Length: 320
Ligand SMILES: [Zn+2]
Image (cartoon, rainbow, N blue to C red):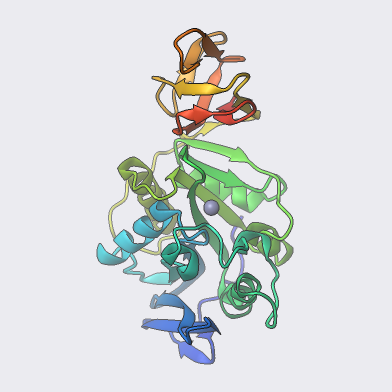
């Protein structure tokens, strides 16, 4: 499936060349803030001695999705990017501005809805533009790391593009606890890469602004399985013969039918039976107690951790 001429002979970013066997930190300047502060994309390149695939590992496209940043950072500290074949391009934190502002956005705009971007556009648009211009041309495939937003905790999962067979292959190798296909969203990073014939899988784990050890570890393990599969690292990594990732075919949000205090004891990722009570919504005066039930047999793939809910609020992302 990935039999092609891989790209890592010489990686070139912003005119800087990184040859076989070389490693370098490159900073791509994007824009200046009103204070004069320079916003840059820090990029680590680890180019192996032998030819192989070039993989982009990207954290923090959404600035507040800290698990994505932490797992990419931790692999850097653990020296997991000791690449002998192929190349990894590592962006630990793309959206520096959002990170500082505890926000998924960059100056009020979602970078992941700003592709392909433009050199003269908004900060988010420029970030998208430079990411595509400087990095993506070097890349064979990418893993984009994310975290659930708005106090919704995503059980570790891989999302791939339905019509992209290579993405599906990568999802199976990654072997996260859950995997499912997810439609391309216009102006997203994954959509833009798809147009450029670059497969992207999206890893989601945990929730924004909260570190989640399981989500971090599952993300690291999956990434190591990918690097090992393509013989890029020597490190011993256990890879199951067959993917054990649970494939979800149908998804829907279970929403609050009443407003109130939401409480649940069901574990994220749990397998549940039709009619099983997933949680309760109580009014604040102790008069009503509304039970939230599973619509079918299935899995909890994301869980809302915010206790005050209005009618229509998302409680669980439910997979079958
Ligand atoms: Zn995200």
